[in-house]
Image (cartoon, rainbow, N blue to C red; front, side, top):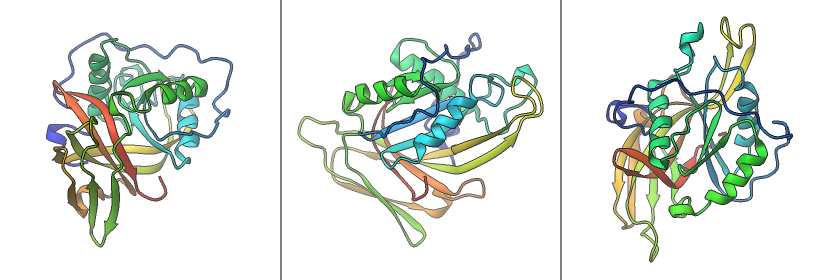
Length: 260
């Protein structure tokens, strides 16, 4: 996804060396097939890995959630499990940096797979639909999350993004990002914890680019085709996200292309 100021998908700066994160704790009694409609809009970033034996149920769950119109779902494959014998074919180092920066921004230090980050604010075990639903409800509107009604549409060879003026007392500054997305990827795993399995991934992030800054006034952004299209993607998502101290914060708005 383009420049992303030296990284991909909203990540900023380098990641500090640290002990490799663990697998997620086991989810509750509900399985990944117990998916209820999501009532409020939500952005779910699933940090996952082909080398993580706990991740396939989460990958299946995010595929199911992604079909819902209110859900802006992204699979974010990380690279820190590559050392166990299988190099994740979809992982981007920027996904790992982004996950760690989220943990630093929250102040809880929780980094694991599969981890679902909700609206840039909270997190839950990525294979636990009940936990994700609860966090979705908790994080809607928190710190202004999903409170700005943006519009985005492709007109000819240009993606136009319209951001309204800030509401009284609401958030009034954020960065506008465009992410390239591959709606479906199927990978046969040759080694590691998932050796021999064929796994399917939905809405895989292939990178992003910051396209402008919203400063509280009504603004329009016109993004050329080479930013939101590419040979590794068949869709796009737009995010309006606050950033503080180089770390990602609340996602104030989201839009997606048809089919995602």
